[in-house]
Amino acid sequence: MALQWLILSYVVAAEVVIAVILTLPYPMLLKKRIVSLVSLILQPAASIVAFAGFQLLDLYWKNEHRLMCSSEVCTATERDRYEKSIYKAQRNVVLCAAGILLYWCIFRICKYNKDLEHLEELEKRCKAE
Image (tube, rainbow, N blue to C red; front, side, top):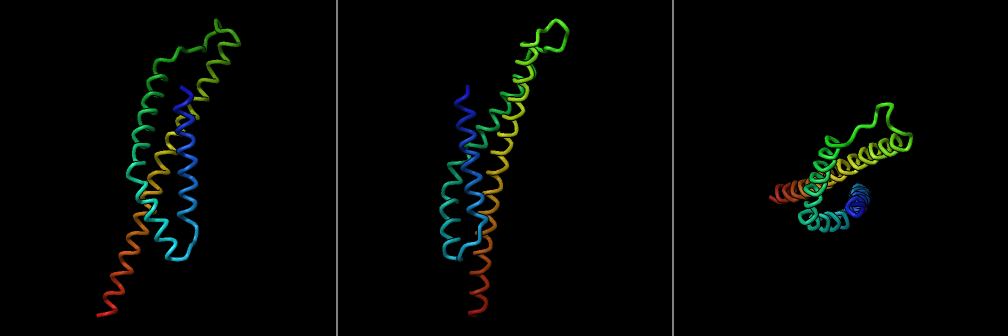
């Protein structure tokens, strides 16, 4: 079970690095190359959205069927275990949401740069005429 969260955390870390690289100011030629490379990666990487969504559904199901430990009958260790599982679930929800949000941000940054490039080409054509 921990392997899927490890994979998701590495993917989120890679998305953060890609988002930072895309937002740094570069010369125009280098920027175009970086955007085109990331755009090629985006389509196969879209599976992260489905994977994170599935993990969110799994967390929701586990939350609905979790044994409650709020009465006085619970021991201190059972209460600690319950609280720890709640904190881990909250962390995993944030991780899934971050994965989806970062993918969307990277997609929008690439689309914005491609639209900007297209408009610049259009402007050059209009000036040439």
